[in-house]
Image (cartoon, rainbow, N blue to C red):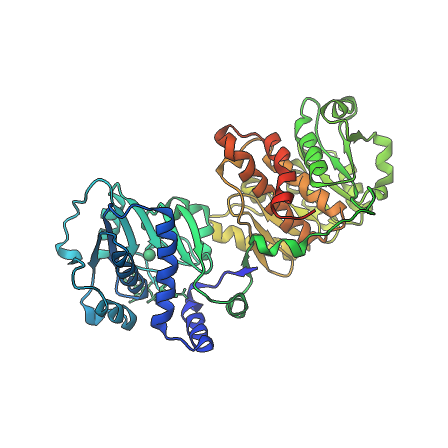
Length: 491
Ligand SMILES: NC(=O)C1=CN([C@@H]2O[C@H](COP(=O)(O)OP(=O)(O)OC[C@H]3O[C@@H](n4cnc5c(N)ncnc54)[C@H](O)[C@@H]3O)[C@@H](O)[C@H]2O)[C@@H](O)CC1
Ligand SMILES: [K+]
């Protein structure tokens, strides 16, 4: 897992890496510049488009100067705009400045005229993780001017003005792309900052995962390479019992789609046997949607222990008569997955929370979460409340959205890296419930079911949206689930 290091620790991390590798700070900056340039030339193969690099006085500016040299040497048209007198700039900035070819045009911000050709690149190397206060004065002035340009805008490490671990106050650079070094900065994962960060690209500058973990605290970014070890592998002699018998409970008269989608998602995730409990009169409709789903009658709910995992809530309606829910939580001693109206019922009848089987998994979106914990003024507060909710109730709290977070009772928080905007469609969350319930039923720990669940769900959304884009629907996500296992070579 990739540790997300707080901004204030990044310079210590740098120093530790420098010492361990026996390199200089300047060499590390060169690695960062090279990593940026590799991405840039791969993405934009157009040396004829002019590039304006705006460099602040710190090491973020130093990165900009090094990038200017490297791109210039490759034939790109570069102009540098700097802010401060050289003597006020960091030593690595100065060292890189002195290495610049004399033919690169260098301008000062206060005399620079913001009249640029229509097609240009603007690179923001003004401020990075060293930001320690909101933008004001000439810095704010610059960023506002840059935001007004129609150029393709790229931020180095983090858009200038966004605090690494907090919520933006005032304004910041509006990037189309943010190329960040080694790990995403926490604030880049906040919905408040989506319009500032644009697409996030993480580039490797050679700092090892081990060292990152030494400096990391409790937040992690999930990557593809973390997934295989969290999966169970099956073989020729595995039988359908090994793949689990799961029960999905939900639906209400006239509203059965949600729980049937969860059930189909569980099948596509590999469950051996999927049972679905719908309100009495609707039971037979499950047989129409997928012959593989078995309808469960009310009387069969007496034998909950027959099931390896239970997911509850999609389309259920608020359970004002919560006696069944209460008895389910009392009787089923394995973790349950609770979503949608299951969560809304918990919010209305919070004493039920005390009955949650240990390591149960709750999957609220922001509104459902705030019904449980009260209003949150920003994402930082939401994450803090998710952490304490998970601790207090000994459950796993999955907060759905872009970069879905998974909070564990031990205080750790994981952020998902898959998924896209096209997944914001009816039923997408029901699919996640089915996937996670399926993993639990296959014998995964709650932590692994949650992490694998959100990753596969997001990847299925990415795969399905390649051809469908905004026309993608939740059923397309379900159909793409098998391909996620193929892509990840998990069989
Ligand atoms: N391990 C890493 O992550 C590496 C980091 N490097 C770069 O170094 C950057 C961090 O460099 P620094 O620590 O020098 O910090 P910055 O370059 O982000 O800025 C620091 C300077 O800006 C001033 N400042 C802070 N907030 C301000 C504001 N609102 N208005 C005006 N001035 C403000 C500070 O007083 C300081 O002089 C990273 O973001 C990254 O770009 C790379 O060079 C190499 C490796
Ligand atoms: K920046």
